[in-house]
Image (tube, rainbow, N blue to C red; front, top):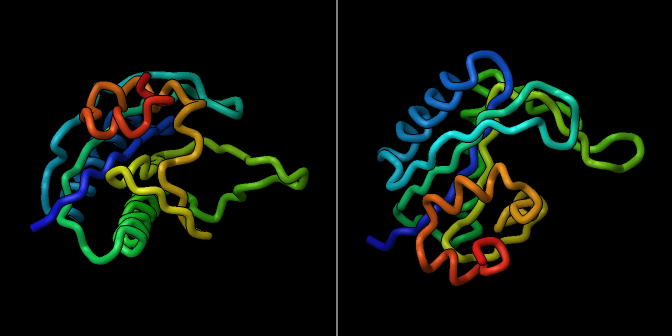
Length: 161
């Protein structure tokens, strides 16, 4: 069975942040039916884009069985991570953009982002992969570098260079 390497970024700045990350990993494992192949260390960083408590961040690499087209499978994965976020108490109705049209960031009990789906580029109304802000976020790049494989580093030298 063909597999795809899916890189996820997790973050939490509300409640018991360590427990939130562990719970999210456990829920992802249950949803995917497997443990991650690689897990980064947890890094603590200031809130990005707004004033708030510090975040704990980490990255995971899963080698998942490929299901359907990359767009179909990645969209299914997005729905899965959003269900986990909601089940853990994240308000998915929080506004993404303010009245000025700028992105609005919030405190989060959990945030799970799909960073990469193999080396595929996916751009739909619902999902953009690679995640468009990886290059601006050291709190993602640092743990991602720990777990990334050579094929990903070669495909995205601007991130891993």
